[in-house]
Amino acid sequence: MWKTLSLILPVLMPSWRFFKTIEPSPRVQWRFLTDKNATTGDWQDFRPRPQAVTAVQMIGRLFWNPVWNDNLFVVSCAERIEQQRTDRSITEITQRILADSDATQMNPQVRLVQFRLLFVHRDGADLVEDIVFVSDPVAQPRGPSC
Image (cartoon, rainbow, N blue to C red):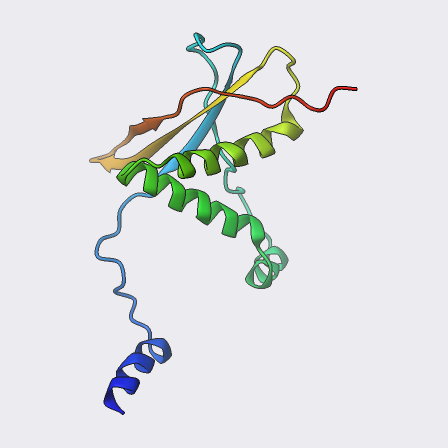
C-alpha cells in the first residue's frame, strides 16, 4: 500500500525541483550557402519567438500549440547534440529547417543550408555567445522536375 502511494503521490503533488540546475537553452540559427566553400551567409534565428502575443492567442495556445511542441523537440535535439552528437538529432533539426525554408526560398543560386547551435549567457553586463556546434552544409532537395 505504501509503495503504491509513494508512486502516486508525486503525480498528484509534483515537485518543481526536477531540474538539478537551470542552464541556458541552446539557440538554433541557420543560413543558406551557394556552395560548400562559401563561408559567408547571414545567420538567422530558427523560428524566432513573436514580439507580442495577444490574450486570445495565449488562451488558444493553452489548448492547441503544435508549433511550440515542435520547437521544444528541436531544443531537446540541440541539447542532445551538445551533450553527445547523434546523426538523428542533426537530421531532425536539418529537416525542420529545410521544411521551413522551402516557403521562404527565393534565390535559385542557394543550394545548401547549414545550422549552428549557440548558448547565450551573461558575463557581468555583457551578453556572450558560445558557439557549440556548426553542422556540415546540407544540399537542399530540389522540387520534382516535369
